[in-house]
Length: 261
Image (cartoon, rainbow, N blue to C red; front, side, top):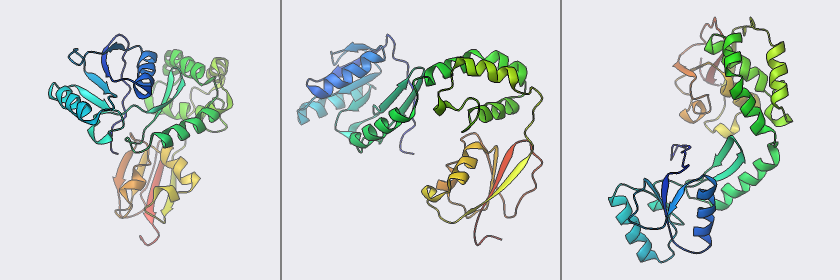
């Protein structure tokens, strides 16, 4: 992973924007949408700066000066000089999806954004707000964090009552909370996945889905890190030489290569 994606609140915070032309205007619009206090003076006090100066020598001099002060810089069309990049954004407030390529191709990020725009319903933001307001009710119904997470995962799963791609809204969240079993516990499950390639793009859809859901991932030593990276970030990863015993709760995976015993 070349960068750590972060969402920074810029409402009322100063951000330096230097340069003229279409690129600078586009960055200005983006910063204005985020509520930033845009400063056009290089010497302004700010933690972030966007440099959209076309002249190479002038731009590099300004970038060096800003970095010497500890300011993080986005250097437009100069990816090797960027401390941070500005992604393509799908906005379903409060849901934000950011797509970045590390400055490799803004065109690719734009193409992906356009595809995602067509997939995500306008009701997605309302669903997120309803889930946020339901936190207390969910904690009451599922006091244990692991049970609560599994219930939410099941509700939001493909075909579930809160499937976010089907237009689920606030009313559906209320109905889901009213009908879900407060004592429901997920039966322990252990799925075996045979890894045939070190390329995560060759995972089956089912394997990729399980990796995104599993609580624990047991894996043989020969399983590539790129495969393990497809698991949930908070899933427990355990290296093992043999198929483990699993008493739960929740879903565990046993990943091994075809030639592993």
